[in-house]
Every structure is written in C-alpha cells, then in structure tokens.
Image (cartoon, rainbow, N blue to C red; front, side, top):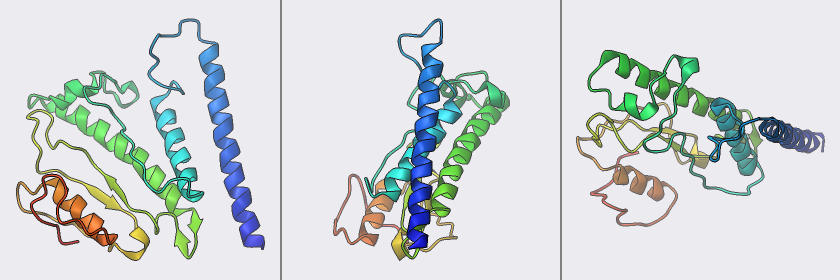
Length: 211
C-alpha cells in the first residue's frame, strides 16, 4: 500500500543519508595531513559523531535489528573539552569542581548539551511511525549516569530520566522521588517487572520502585 511504500522510501532515504555522512567523514579523515595514532572519533566533530550514532540506533530500532542498546556519551576520566560551549577545561576536571562556581557552570553546560543530543534522538523516535504508534511509544530509554556529584564521587541523589511508552507499559509525565540511598538497581528491577521478567532481585537491589 501507499503508506508502506512511503515508510520504506523514508527508511531507505535515512540509510542513504547516513551512508553519505560516513563517506564524507572518511574522506575528511583521509585528507588530514597529520592523523593522530588514536583519533577521538569519526567524524571529527563530537556533535556530528553522536548524531550519526543516534541515527544508526534509530534505524536499528526501526528495522528490529536490535531491541536493546547502550550508548556512553562520555567515557570515564574524559579529557574532552567543549570550546563551542565555552568550556575549555576537560570534562573530568570540571566534574571535580571543588565548589568553584565557574567549574560548576561549565559542568552544567556539558550536561545540558548531552541532554540536548539525547533529546534529538527522542524526537527522531517520536517522528518515526511504528505499528499503531511511534518508535518512541514502543521503546523505553533510561538516560542518566552512575554518579550524582563528581566532586565527591557520590552515588545519590541520582537524577535519571525514563523516556518512552514501553509499548503501553509505562505512564509518562511524572516525577518520582525515592527515599535517600535507594539503589539504582531497585529501579532496574522494577523496570524488568514491567516487562514480565520475574526477577526477585537485581544486583544490590533492596526492593522495588513504584512505577
């Protein structure tokens, strides 16, 4: 039918667009005079690199090549700087802010930027039809980190975002505050129950979270 043909054409156009971006990035790398032994990434632009990987993930979801992914936006002890944001100190350095106002502001800029990159991916899933809804309706994404305050290496309070309808299993538009020192494993255990995985415990879990 016309609707299916339109969806197939849209998918193929996305594939070709990503192919062109990868080819352009490879060409860009070849013409560099001095290639470092360990390049930070292809493409050279971090923002473009992240966007390309998110688009590949969206295509993988769309074609059901995978149903699970993990994506680390910044590795531990990252020395990446963000001059376009006005952050010239490495990410790891500003996370250990020492209560310096300038470092806290810089770290905030980096976190907001990462969230904006994730938000674009979410919008891509929202705009992609899938069955009786969208890819976002039928997905469940957990966004966050494993550390609350890099300066003190504290594990809580730890803000996490759970995005997507989970194929009707999740209710959105809520802010849930858990008791102090609630392990993140409690949340992950609760999510597994939403998908009928009957675990009694997960990692260091001490219970569940009311979702």
